[in-house]
Image 1 (cartoon, rainbow, N blue to C red):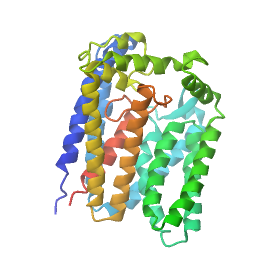
Image 2 (tube, helix red, strand yellow):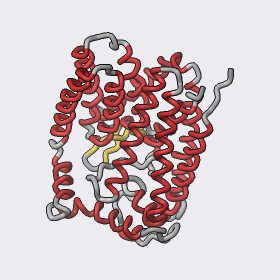
Image 3 (spheres, rainbow, N blue to C red):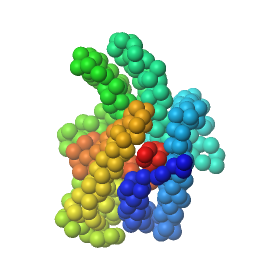
Length: 364
């Protein structure tokens, strides 16, 4: 029987992708003129690397959702290849593209990828299959194995360093692990242990002084390390510029203020400036509808593995969406997290489209 795609999920994805294209067109013109002397340069790259390749990834995910459990080898291969790529980033500098204090991009000559982004769906799938093998073990054994698994995943990503990506990778695994528990004693014991683990990871991340400086700048509102607060201040001004109705497409004055990472980390601020509170509210509603549909498809898929995968992807996207927007409106420290469907960042966007393609095939 032919696999049926879920048209509700597909429709929401198409609407969000269209909004992302429209917004990126507006945002990218100035950056294109500045860096390439051609106003549509970054927009063309976005269409090819994000929209087109994202569509290909979505279709690939949908095709793999047929006989889902028979594709373990493909999912495991993706996990192992990308995990080894993370290790290569650390030990083979000539394969990496270095930016600021991080080494997150693997240069393959013909293409540059970010393994910590691409690995997200494969980590979730690998963990679900891994967890199933120990579901009858005592909670102390399962928790120990889970902590060891988190350490194996965390170390190469933390050393890049890429704390925000690491948190987005860990969060779905934690949600899935708690979903698998059946007794409140197990939940309480696991909560305390995992809380201590997360505190340890965050503490270790402060070994990189720029993170501590960024945190101090944020909580002091720029009184300490003022230059580190510049991005937060500029994105807040851009959001406030939009008012209720917005300035209109392409009419934001904030784009002229040299907002850092305007096509990636700060892109929501320009959307809010041009589409206003009303447009931002519509975006949030669309995204919540997407999360609802993902979870709904998982719950009705008739498979624990599919349900856990949908829950993991929903947790990942919800956290990423929250971190991006909250950092743009001054509620959270800038994290370098891209906005799904909107930001320039092919690796992260392709991973999202691929995951949604898989879930679109869960319709019964």
